[in-house]
Image (cartoon, rainbow, N blue to C red):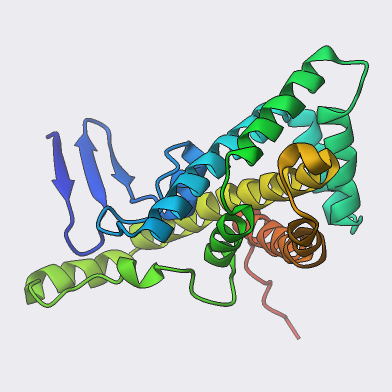
Length: 253
């Protein structure tokens, strides 16, 4: 038996194929940003401020892709290792920026720095774009627009609701939720890491990035420290979801 099923309650898609079943879940906005679509605001949000923010976030997505493309597996592994050893997160990002964009022994670095500066100059309000994305990543509060993802179940019958409840109390449901949390934690860690590297690089580029003194001060004094906190939080979440748990041994005493 093979087939394709869409669940209106969870929004998941189920592929039934010979030898197994696969589930596909919806991406949230941060994942879409990471995957390169740059889509953020809803289509019906058409006032000038929203459209300007939409364009800025799309450009921000291009900046993150540029940063991510410069990172090697060794650099990312070392970054996470140093954070686990409680090294200063901002200092680690500064070292990466120096190596990626300002190492004069590598010709490609100058081109990458110029490309990044060009993208940053094309943003109308880089602070608002950064704040919007960081707010959506904040673990302690709802991100902007999160209410859009609350699903209306008023027209879903009792049998569908019951099947959904059975799914998420089953071993399959637990596995789906665990895997989803693992994926989201890993992707969001990448996004906040790349955002930190981007902000440090923007400060290093100074006038080339188009930042005013006030913008640079806000990024350095407020946004970068907040991003460092988020990196530690998502590092912890990622470690939690990837660590194998074992049941405690029953005491014989």
